[in-house]
Amino acid sequence: MSHDGTAFAYVQTYDPQSEAGHHFGHLPAGSRGIDQFIGVPDMLGRGHGTGLLRQHLGTLFAAGVPAVGTDPHPDNARAISAYRKVGFEVAGPAQDTRWGPVLPMEAWPAVQAK
Image (tube, helix red, strand yellow):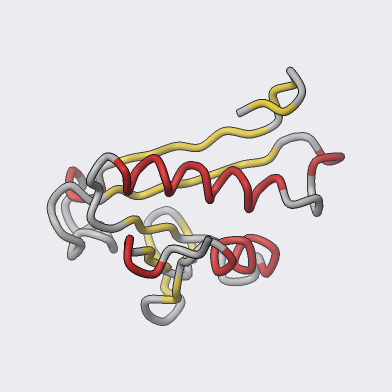
């Protein structure tokens, strides 16, 4: 993703059902998992992550994706707050996975924040 011509972040979208035992494998077929990363420190804390997430969720839901899961580190309060602002809700307790500790969060089209 870019802002004013400068790349500052990426969003990864994946199929959680393609990985046996994935913690989002219970989501309906066609659901997606996402990860994001803002790599430019000057872009943090300015609403760019929230805007990026809102735009990406809107694109996924407009394409018919039934649900989206994300799994920030349980101690990453900034990420959890950004996800909540765009409609993600905590979907269970923090857990240890083969990718490390995660807090499962889910977003559904009916509850996406505007």
